[in-house]
Every structure is written in structure tokens, then in C-alpha cells.
Amino acid sequence: AKTEGKDTYRYFEASMGAEARDKRVMEHELRQAVARKEFYLVYQPQKEISSGKMVGFEALIRWRHPTRGDVPPTIFIPVAEDSGAIGQIGEWVLTAACEEAARWENPLTVAVNVSAVQLHNPNFSRKVHETLLNSGLAPGRLELEITETALVKDMPRALATLRQVKALGVRVAMDDFGTGYSSLSNLRAFPFDKIKIDGSFIKSVDKNGQVAAIVRAVLGLGRGLGLPVLAEGVETLGELKFLDAEACEIGQGYYIGRPGLIEEFSELTGVDAPT
Ligand code: C2E
Ligand code: CA
Ligand code: CA
Ligand code: CA
Image (tube, rainbow, N blue to C red; front, side, top):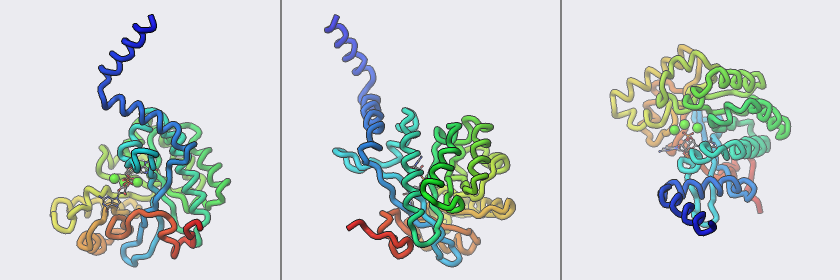
């Protein structure tokens, strides 16, 4: 019977294919990665375009795998979302980002990405509240970035959560605007404080009339709704100049500042590298 079991297992493995097997290994590793302190955060500047003034940072997770090196979030976040590990990982991100931001000399905003799984957890707003109290971070300095895809799973639940975190004084930004569907009704239905235009619309916006028309329309939408617009993925001076001329409020991207360890921004935060 033992041999039979082994053969059955082997058959199962073979039928799964290499990709599914890799995914299973990664799910297992992700469940241990928080305890093993394999995650860290990098921060990317967000600046007011008209003045060049820093307004905040987006916190972006990094996973230093003990043997595979840095694994990009575009690879491991979807795996963590499927397996449920994102709950624990998301809590780690929120705690680490709030604790770090509370130590900065300047009261800059810290923007944290929130996945659909976190947003639909009925305890989410309570966890945000506890994290703010424990870290001492002023609620107005925390911004949660939420994609439209995260809203659609259970809209009434997502709306309830957004209202709860907003009642704490936390701000919410619609992330990756333009890449989801029914963007316009979502803007009306949910109490967002900011629109983040996806980087795919910023690429060559200064050279492509069609893309420029879309970005102008989003900026008009933001103006009409009284919501500031942040353009992400700003990679060139030409793109930045276009956005400035069109009065886009905030910019983020490699041309404005690459994501880096917080100590690389010590002139703004006063946080130096550990000695
Ligand atoms: P996102 O939220 O849209 O984050 C912006 C991504 O664009 C980041 O990639 C950033 O490094 C990259 N980026 C910034 N400026 C430029 C630019 O000028 N050009 C280009 N081509 N890319 C730029 P990253 O850090 O690899 O993160 C990828 C995605 O992974 C994020 O997209 C977000 O969806 C997810 N993610 C990252 N950190 C977290 C996290 O803590 N929690 C959750 N749930 N998701 C996260
Ligand atoms: Ca984001
Ligand atoms: Ca984004
Ligand atoms: Ca994006």
C-alpha cells in the first residue's frame, strides 16, 4: 500500500506540471517568509509636479529569497493572494510602513498597497486602527492604494471597509486607474480621495495624441470631482513637462525618483542607515 501511495503521489506531481509545482513550493515559502524576516520595504517618492515638492512615498514590498535572491512582487503577490498568505504579508507591510513613517522628521504621506483579500476581511479597518495607535502615526499621513479589481469581488463589503477607514481619517487612492473596468461608476460609488493614473497611460503621453487625449480626460474628471490626480510611471522629462502643462497635481516614476531604501532619503526623513 505504501508503494502504491508513493506512485499515486508521483503521478499527481507529474500531472501538475512544473509550473504548478513551483507555485506550491512558493506558497509554502511565502507562509514562512514573514517570520524569517525575508521581506523589506522600498519607498518611491511622490512629488507635487508644479513645485517639485515631496509629498510622500509609496511603500513597495521586496522579498529577498534565501537562495533565489530578490523575487519581484509581480510574481509573488498573486501567489500570496491565491493561497491566503497575503493576509499576514499585508499586515506586515502596513505595520512596517506605519512604524517607519512615524519616525520621519517631515510629516510626509506613506502610501500602502492593499490587496482584495485584505479589503474584504471584516477586521481590516480594526487592524488599520490598531496599527495607527501602536505606531503613533497620524491617520492623515496614511494613504491606502486600492485597485478597482479589489473592489468588484464584493462591492458592499468593500464600500463598508472604505467608509470605516475613512472615518479613522485615513485617505484612499484609486490605484491603476484606467486598467480595470467600469472605472467611472466606481469613482462615483466609492469615497476615493485621489486618482492614480496607471503608468501605461503616461508612457509617451507627450508623443502620442491618443494617449494624451485619455490623460487629459482623466485630469478633467479629477477636476470635476475635486480629486487630485497622481500620474505614475513618469519616466522622461517630456512626460513630466506634458503633465505640468496639463496641471496634473502629483507625479511618481523613475524620472522623479526611483524606489529606494528609506535611508537613501535621509535628508527628508532624518532616518539614517543602521550603523
Ligand atoms: P503598483 O502598485 O502599480 O506599483 C508601481 C510599480 O511600478 C512598482 O513596481 C514600481 O517600482 C514601478 N515603477 C515605479 N516607477 C516606474 C517607472 O517610471 N516606470 C516603470 N516601468 N515602473 C515604475 P513593483 O515595486 O515591482 O511592484 C509591482 C506591483 O506589485 C505593484 O504595482 C503592486 O500592485 C504590487 N505590490 C508592491 N508592493 C505591494 C504591497 O506591499 N502589497 C500589495 N498588496 N501589493 C504590492
Ligand atoms: Ca500602488
Ligand atoms: Ca499603481
Ligand atoms: Ca501599475
